[in-house]
Image 1 (cartoon, rainbow, N blue to C red):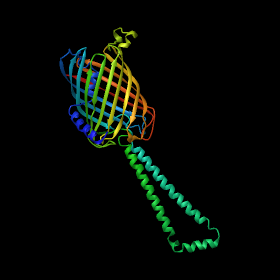
Image 2 (cartoon, rainbow, N blue to C red):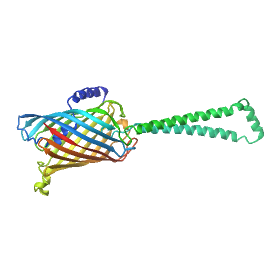
Image 3 (tube, rainbow, N blue to C red):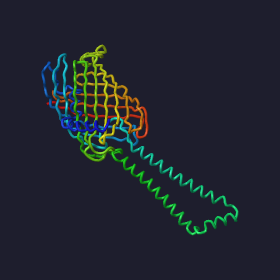
Image 4 (tube, one colour):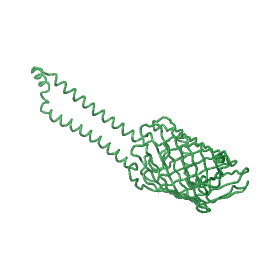
Length: 386
């Protein structure tokens, strides 16, 4: 993306941030029983104010130091919905609110900690320089070792006559220089250790309060098909992140097709013959940029899923491949990861829904600043529709 397009994206995302928020509107749709709303008749309109409070955490077990992030989000927004024929609808969903951050802030999947590679390069440079100094010292010692007979030694002494009084001093200065180089190298280690403890270490201390937004347009031509476009701006308000303060951007496009009406309740006598009514497949692409404009990459999830009820408890299971294409900044090649998600929701009142979710993703390839293994994201909260 060129600088002009990114500036347009950044300017528009500030506007979106004024009327956006993430989890609140996702819960109204995905955990849509908040309010128990029936499909709108064609041509009718409704506006539903919503509020979501969610606590969530991320655990990057595939990265060195196992960095963690935690947050409590308070999102306030609205769903504007228009009824269409064939039980369809068109909706604009938006919310905005604070995100209290512990450890690292939530960030786009697959973000590489590039400073680790820089530190490795620094280590290699220091080691190489130290090795060169050692080789030069050995060569110089070897030159002196070749003067075995007395005459050659006397010639050599005459050749260095004026410098003999300074040899000890020169050697001391060389030793001091090597010591300084070693101290510089140690300083590099200290800087890296300080960074490792900066949101990467245990404890995940409280950092700051950021601002999190969500804006989505959703089109459902019927009760089987859904298409949506989403924008998820996130403003980092202070220090503590690798890419600094400023506005992070994430955009997504998603298509969901349901093979049945979604009405499967095993507590009411539904059996295996009814499973097809809860089966669906989703294709979602997401793309992310960091606060300084760095393009992090994009991924596409091709995930089949199954949703069903046990009395009032709704359970949705999904999973499959994640085709990930990292940005050029990372130096990594594209790969196929594997992930899934378990979502639970339970209405405790007509307009109140409790929810929880867990999304593990397994990365199949490693590299500088990135590793093979699992990343986990878990969250729980409540959505209230007014």
